[in-house]
Image 1 (tube, rainbow, N blue to C red):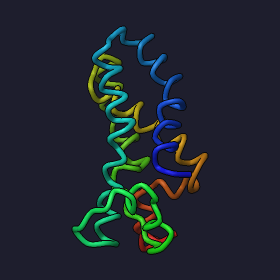
Image 2: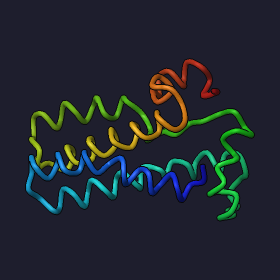
Image 3: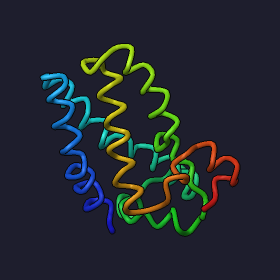
Image 4: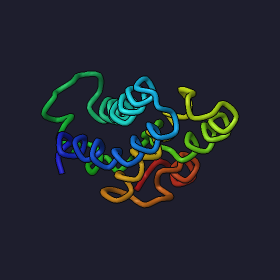
Length: 136
């Protein structure tokens, strides 16, 4: 699946989570933050791309995501359950209207699609990836 279709599906899968966030916060600001994080979490793909290709950039190489399968190492520092867990504690304390709550729910929604489409639940743990040398 190409990056464009993957990004569209992130938005679709995120919709029920956005509805929950709206129901709890009644805040368009929260929804905007939520969707920004749902999509911009993928900025960490750039780090993996640069580790493979160097600091040059080709849009076609980037959206193909071939660098993941060719190099067999994946860092994806923002794609991690650890962030969800850490933010959960701050979210509970601050409530649904906090920026942290929107960010946390967005990362969770993003990982739900990634688990369905790419790797396993444990793969999306930074600790698990570090123990395994960031290989898959």
